[in-house]
Length: 451
Image (cartoon, rainbow, N blue to C red; front, side, top):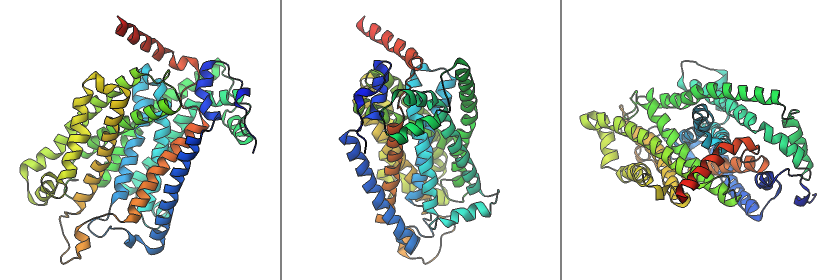
């Protein structure tokens, strides 16, 4: 293997060196991290092999709880994928220039998350060949087909959005990184498609970027709305609600914003990019997270107030199970620790600093995943038409080690995809104009603090 001499790279400026250094250099931490993720993925692959060989009986899913943590993971990954539209579309179209350094991070996470969502739904089917039957015998009146169509569309558009955003920097890698491996040189040359940074090329790219941002936005809203329809069109307590669409979308934006904050902190710390991902970014992301959490809190109140006020039949049993029953500790921990406390703490500027907001964001992410668990599992355990004289295993759900192994492997795969993409391509825009506005804002903030 050819040893790379990092001193021979043709950097045009110290800025390029800062933002391209991680593409060239490979630290022992990176190798250790990738090895750790691969071990988890291999364990998950063995668990999936057992599931394919022996069937879904190796899981704890039965006739009552026919959806387990696989569907919780699916909904969570779809939620995280919406962060790409939040930054690439909403904030970009609103001309929030401070978010430009975070756009690529969000797009990488969006592409990786939607890929994992597509894989986990196939895993949930039991045999992978069943997915081809879904396509072969497509029934447009089935909400599952709606989900397949919208996820495929969103995946393609997310990849295009990421590619268009990263194209100028691929050309920079092609021209500057002369000492990288040959396969990387060929890849950069192929993907750069003769980009020379000509004004006409830049104008066309800008138009395409705006068009995609406009197209992706309704698709992004539709993907989580259609996912919510999978629940709303199923006759189960807790799902019979027209509120589920905006409820899912608002929760997705909140979870995605928290994921971005965690990614910001890790990238800034590991790649030493404090000059480009500043305290101002964490402060603004904290304010954005408060706004998104308040919207989600509203839909949480709206979702549970009606059934809790009436407490009728199976709906009442479901609410009782959540509020004071078996799932009450998890439910209140999610509501208080993953939603209410983060809102209260982030109201204060001190908690919007890098380390405090990192801890708060991790709590929000954990709360978001357990929230998906609470949406899926308790509802399935209280059917409107229960089966008589069933085995005890039908009435409870405790995931088996195979389910946990595949779950951890799916999250490891998400982190693996993100790490690989951020290793091959610049994690922040290299072109100077991308960060000029943010530099001006940061300078003004520093001046105000000094005064």
